[in-house]
Image 1 (cartoon, rainbow, N blue to C red):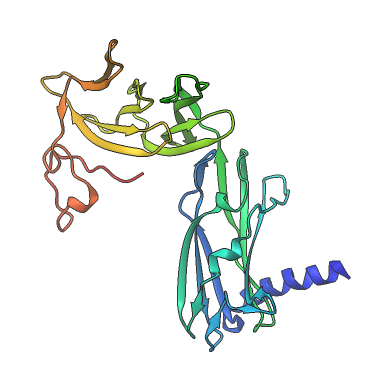
Image 2 (tube, rainbow, N blue to C red):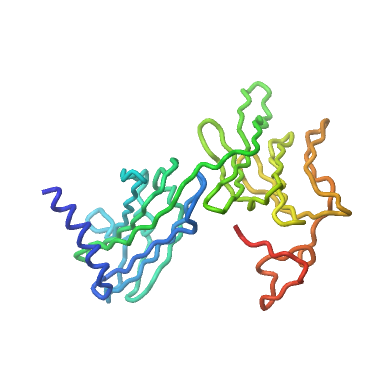
Length: 302
C-alpha cells in the first residue's frame, strides 16, 4: 500500500509535466553554476507559476498544517537519497499567488540539505497544494561539488580581551577549483567544526600565484592578479565577513605585494599603485552603450 501511494505522487507529476496545458502549477528550478567548491553556497532559483485559474495561498493553515508544500528530491552520483535537515516548505510559507501570477525565489540549497561531500547531485523540486489533486515536479538539475586544492593556508588565533581564556584558532586558505578548462580561486575560513566562508576571488592566471597574509588582529588580506596588469586586494575578518576590496596595478614595472610589519603585525600593500576605475579598469556597470576605453580591461563577474 505504501509503494502504491509513492508511485502515484511520483509518476503522475512527471506525466503532467509532459502536457503543460494540464498543469495547474508550473514549476522550474535552475542553479547559478554547474560546479561548486565544497561548502560553497549552491544558489537555486525556484520559479512557480499559478495556472489554476484561482488565487492560491500556500502558507495559509488548514487543520494545523500548511495548505501548500514544497519538497526537494536529491540524489548523489551513486543514487543515494540525500535527507533534508530543514523543511524547505518555509520558502513558500508567505506565498500568495493570484491566478496567472509567477514568483521566483532564490535560496542556498545547503540551508536545507547537507551537500558537504564531493559528488554530482541531481535535484528535483516538487510542489503541491491541498486544493489541487496532484503535486507537480520539475525535471532534474545536475550540480557538481568538488573539493578545491589549497595553494596557501595559515593558522591564526582569535583575538580576545580576557588573558585567562583559552585561545581558539582558525585557518584561512586560498584554494583552486578546477572544472573542465576553468580554474577559480576561492577564499575559505574554517576551524575543526565549521566552515565560515567560501568566497570566489578570481580566475587562475598562469604564472600568477595569489598571496595571503593574516595580520595581528586576525584579519586576512588577499592579493591576486586577475588581469595582465590588474590585481584585486580583499580584506576579511576572522568570521569570514568581507570588509574591503581595492584594485592595484603596476607603477614603473613595480608590482604590488602584501607585506606584514614584524613589530605591529599590520599588513599593507607595497609596490605598484592604486588602479583608477574608468582608466585602468572598468566594471560591467561602467560601460556606456557597450563602449569602454580601449586600454581598460573589463572585470567580469565570477
